[in-house]
Image (cartoon, rainbow, N blue to C red; front, side, top):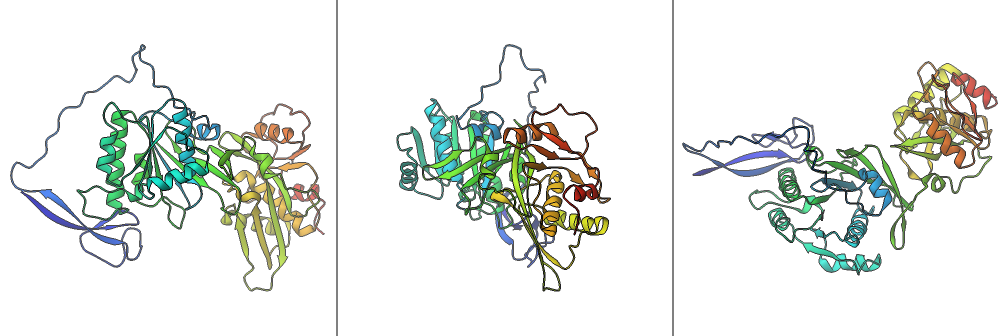
Amino acid sequence: MARSTVAYVCQQCGAIAPKWAGKCDDCDAWNTLVEERKEVPSGPGKRVTGRRIQLESLCPDISSEPPPRMRSGISEFDRVSGGGLVPGSATLIGGDPGIGKSTLLLQLTCKLAATGLKAAYISGEESADQVRMRAQRLGLSGASVEIGTATNASDIAASMDGANKPDIMVIDSIQTMFLPSLDSAPGAVSQVRATAQELIRAAKNNQVALLIVGHVTKDGAIAGPRVLEHMVDAVLYFEGDRSHHFRILRSVKNRFGATDEIGVFEMVEAGLAEVPNPSELFLADRRDHVTGAVVFAGIEGSRPVLVEIEALVAPSSLASPRRNVVGWDSSRLAMLTAVLEARCGVPLSGRDIFLNVAGGLKIHETAADLAVAAALISSVTGRPAPKRTVFFGEVALSAELRQVAQAEARLKESAKLGFDNAVMPRPRKSIAKTTGISMVQPTTLAELIEFMGGIN
């Protein structure tokens, strides 16, 4: 006989409390504890015993070959996924509402279906007619993709079994799925965890490549328990500002490829189009002789990307001057302004500072320190940065410049786009000379200021 137990589960972090409280003790979130019931076996002889598992050798059989990857033909997606989808893998894709997750996955499944693979698109948010309307708008109405509308994870898992199982299945989205055995609403922590486990188990047992859409919170993290990102094989974030016409697919976890790889797409009338050279896109509207604007040679995964960084320093009438940052770390800007003022005498206190990465790209590497410093110096002095010059390097608290990785790849990309000069820290080992690029290698921020004409 089973007995019913009651627990209160935090919908923010997944912590379990024996009784209801207004605030979760683990994550300090308010009004997130929700009552959940589950059946627990009781009585004698209810202990579950296991069976001995079969162990295999670490070294595979020479005659056996790993299954081939499923290449979609969308090179930007294949780059981020590590060369294509792996049979039996589970990939979680998150992003803001309306950013284009469903559009990307519908185009992806249609491309894979065109290669002869069997693809299924399961929607828990839209009807089959709505999905067909999107396919017609994208010019994909003739694709041999099977559409399903279901929210019961047990039914979807059963559809992955048998001779007619699909090779690829899309779940849109995991927050709409539920298991009847759980007494909680779809989207609850317990439902997200249990349904994901059920779907991933079925996908791995039947060698189905599973693509799961995950909603995000207002902080940008995927909604639901953090364990969801640990359960899947790859986590991809679809980023971008809806006011801009391009989107970035970023890999933050990948068991079958490199992390921090990005793919760039442009939102057009017919859906998402690939951008093979994102540097040209980010620098398309750039003009020379503009104060406070410099070009940063960055690295996203294995791809060099050139992007413009803009800074504006203006007098402030506020007691606490504003520091507005778009596309970079605000705490990093605070550190850099302190170093420029304390070590180099650049007058930044009492002034508003606005920093923007053109195009809406988000930069995470510290190699952008030197470019941001150059943009701030240019804005303060009113003199534009040298023409056809790129900047990259890390700044220490002592105002010294430190080398960064993959300098040669940054220089080659800069030369390909017509830049003549590069301002960078002096590397410890020699760099193969890049055709058409002359290098300026200051050792401190003071030398950078002197290179840019000094402070008035």
